[in-house]
Amino acid sequence: MKKKEITAIRKRLTKEGCTISRVSGCYVSKDKQKMDSFSENLLAMEEEDFFRYLDLAKKVLSGKVGNNILNLPFSDYDKQRSLLALRDSELKEETILDAFYDLIIENYEPEDNFLILLFHDSYDVMSRNTGNELQDESEEVYQYIIAAICPVALSKPSLGVLAEGIRSVERNWLVGNPDTGFIFPNFVDESTDIDSVMYYTRTPKLPRPSLMQEVLGCEAMMTSEEKKVVMEEIIEESSDDETLLVNVHAELARLDEEEQELLTPDLFTEVLEEAGMEKEQAARCTERFSEELAEDLPIVAQSYEAKKVEESMVRKERMALADQLSNLQAATTQKENTVSIFCQGNIDIRMVDGQRCLVLPLQDEEILVNGKPMEDPAAAEDI
Image 1 (spheres, rainbow, N blue to C red):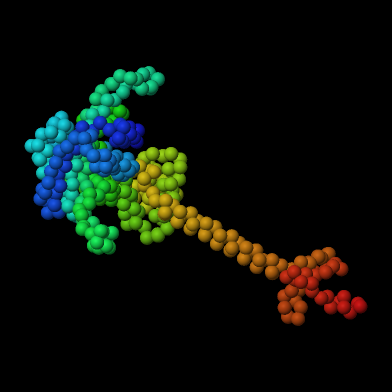
Image 2: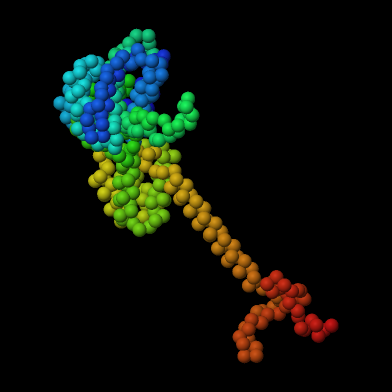
């Protein structure tokens, strides 16, 4: 999925546009014991409950493509067939649901209790004419499931206003926003793609690759955040210059302004050299970059941090001010050592009272030394 398809699905997850036929769930303890399960018609729920479930489904479609959202191709086609069976069951087959819950429970490492949610929906994709305008007839039916794994945490101790006064209130187990999820099949170019999965992670630094591989049967991919960490490690291991990494972020921001989409090895070399790294050193870094990231190139726009770009700009401004101050001090020193005189005739060098001196004839003008007039003894004698 790209931004266009994600927006199209999100627009459906509203009270007016929602056609989700069913939501199923399994509540699991921290020690991976099933505690409860359910399967209901979402549209038949109380309005408040309906919106809470819908909000959780929407979260799986949030964040940046390439960082929070990854498009994963299948590598295990048995897992693909299992997902197709889950979708085609419309979440009504208890045996299929339980098997899928067990697979998630086995491969998900929770920090607390958690809730597995599955939503089933069908989307009539409207056809378009040659002018790319939507028609009234359906081109295909995109049938898909949304999965969301939500942490469940005990609420904090607190006081509440009760009939008998201000008293301690009962603590409850609260369902949080999903930390992981997926949509299958994927929705690519506004059409069903059964050969890939849209994967969601709330925390790009910890995307849970075991779920990608063992639950979905897909190739594990790195998020932009993980790729950024790899790039920074390559740079930091090759140079002790603390300013280099900050300059690299500034150069990446420049590439983004130039609308470069992917960071190729050649562009990575350019960035390093522009940031101040020697050519031979940059070549070694690029070699490692190619080994670790060339098969799934980083997205330029997601490879730098605005904070470090700003830090680089501040440093450059300080350096420019320091240069200006140095030039000003040099100019001031030069001005203070300047002797303003007017002379006529030839300038000569002579020994006077044992000292080597510059001797030159003077006009009847004021003599300035360091901007101040100097008395002329000969002129005083004439008076």
